[in-house]
Length: 185
Length: 437
Image 1: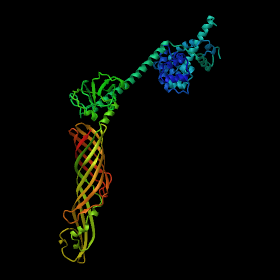
Image 2 (image 1 turned 30 degrees about the vertical axis):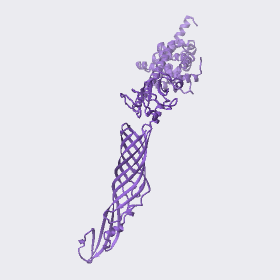
Image 3 (image 1 turned 90 degrees about the vertical axis):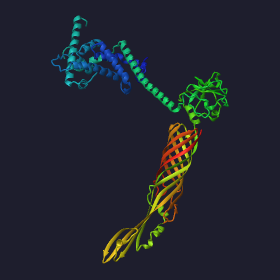
Image 4 (image 1 turned 90 degrees about the horizontal axis):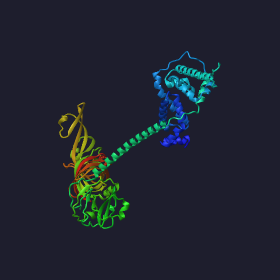
């Protein structure tokens, strides 16, 4: 059974389990992909998703209905993922990166890959690069916002992003060359 | 741009568009985990609520026990052979073969109530007790095996007069039913009438000179101190005052017990106040002497002011003459007091507060020395009001007879006269009462 967002919110505010499950069903796929983008492993993404939805149900009463429910949930998922990654970021402090390959792949090269393949590439990025790439390229945050969120300098955010882009470009080009080489295209 | 190169914005847009609207189905276990956590939270919430309910239940039990403690007269252990005139807060077992209590009517309204699941019924003119039924069922469910009799406190006189000789074994119940409690309270109302007497102190807090000045015959006083002997009296001043004294009273009182704790009491008291007053006369006499010893005067010469001028001496003498007067005042008091029993047993303690309306009867000033004529005062207000408060100790010496002792304090609300606007008094009253149940 599908419910409108309004009904879902009202039902969840009353703590009704059927509405909670309906809300989860409606948003879980997209949010799981968000969690996967910030994770290295599936289990980690599942933990993030579970924790995030518990926060959603707990705090649904604070949701302002003039905003987008999907965006509100995504913010919670991203923040939960950042909390998970933050410990790793502390373990491996991010530093400015220089001497990067500035070659960037073209749009068609990216389009030729499925989101699943792109996801795997993103997941293989170093933790710091992965988080900043997601925040900047996918979520659309500015570097100064990312710097504030992760308590790093703006320069670190920029250099880490450049590193992520460089790594991804290199991997995408490798794939392209492999495809051309194997005569796939 | 090189082959494969692209501007930065296109790179991000390409990535973004690839992920846009996409999703991955999470394993079913995720929702199971969420659902399980939600259940745990719900249970925790319920447990929290349960704890609250447990506290509420505990509080209710405590209130019930407290109610029991203050409602039940603990007379356990005694076999009661006659309920006439006695008060019981207990259910009594009853031999169904016992005597007819002689109550007429199908059902007595007094017993037409229930305590929790216990109904009080009557069968064949006997008061019977049945457990576990609801009021709606009692009309046609009078069963012969009823074998218990209920005797509540403050039984109606008609019941008390029954010649019950059956042995009753009391046991207790909790009076938690408000309907029943109310009935008992209503039937437990009692009245009393009695006589009382009291004695105490009276503090006039005298201020000003009225009305005593009007009552004092200063001319007679001046005559008595030999005003004619003054050479040149330039001024005459009078002064009066009043000292604390003793108040006594006796009267009748009557009251009613309103509920279990509250009382309302009134009566009529004759009150007599006896205290000392005084009146003084000051005369300034100024005259001139040519020679002689100005200090040769005797009597009431109290001070001298001497000035010399060309062989003449001007003398100013101040004469002060005071007499003590007896003051007696009588009035009738109508006290109205509300009372609250702090302890209501054979020895009782009750807090009283209220007011007293005082009707002035008479006041008399008399001079024991005979220097002044005795006078009746007419400067008092006909009505005055006092506030009063006190604690009354009561002791039941016989059935329906109580002795009381009540220390109380009175403070004027309205003045008795202009000079007696702030009088107060402390009195101990004792009385003897007959309780009409």
